[in-house]
Image (tube, rainbow, N blue to C red):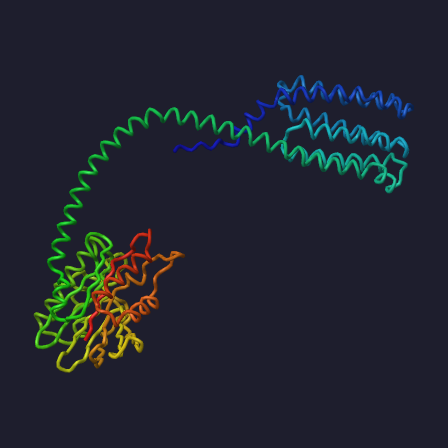
Length: 480
């Protein structure tokens, strides 16, 4: 949308043009009324009638000449009005200075009428009001010093203070009215400009609508082609990932809760068994969707090479080798702007003969829940910490730590990525959190693992509600 802000100089010019006739009329009215008020002088203080009349006529003549010759002299209507109001104010200050208390009090009303009228009729900027206020105070001070026979108390109490109050209110009234009229004119100009812009754009928008529809049709075709390509990539990824049925071959009571955020997932899992050693991995690659999908290809390939190909049985050593391979494959040196991709991954090795778990993990912890086989009331959950570093470039990386844990029948092992605990939802739109996740596992660990999977799935869907899934979700549960 084009800028419809009106420059201040344009608004001021329109303000002047719109109010000029009104100000001219107001100046003539004030000029005439100033002469008419000589009638009050005649009845209030007759002995000064002639000097006062001369003063009034002088102010009127000066204002009239300036008003009629303003275009020749290059002055605007505000200057004409200021000369008139200021002239009458100085004139009244002179009149006050020669009056006794009785006449002073009577003339105070006439002085106040000047500023009340100015407040009602004048529209000018604040600086002119402040100039009028300062000049009025100065004139009254000088005339009081040189001519007045009243004490300061008599001067202030009998009309001076009240008139000063009226002057101050007049300044604020003029300021308020000026801003209201000024803003009204500014809004009117902006509306006129907006209307003009809208009319000019209407024809252009019609043409753009036709062009947009054409582009939309093209994008829909390309979008379908892109989605078809991504779906094909998903088929490839699904073919490379093990199925949940393969997990059941190795663990009769187990589950894999796998909920990709997008068509292609950045989380992946892997399993391999040899010589009564069952290896399985739970991994979260950088990003999700297509970028994460590329990383899963690397991760699956490297696991096959390291554990199946090189026969590495130590999970910590496997993670160290994976890190080296990822850094080499992505050419990571730590320089600014280069790829920081990697993965958080847990590799478990369960020795069936020794009934023990060897595992190493990058960033993702592991839970083991021990159930009382005689009932579901007595349970303990133990959280095993991961190394706080990714499998990828890290400025202060060190070798991964191997942890060995003895197992018993009925022990439940849970590995997971951060997608489940980090999902926003609930009544306040907050994260699910690991504490609530662990409690959920504790409450249901005695149940069949297929039931546990359904409960976990329903729980996170209910928690998420109408909110978007923010990341891939992967949870793997195994019972010994």
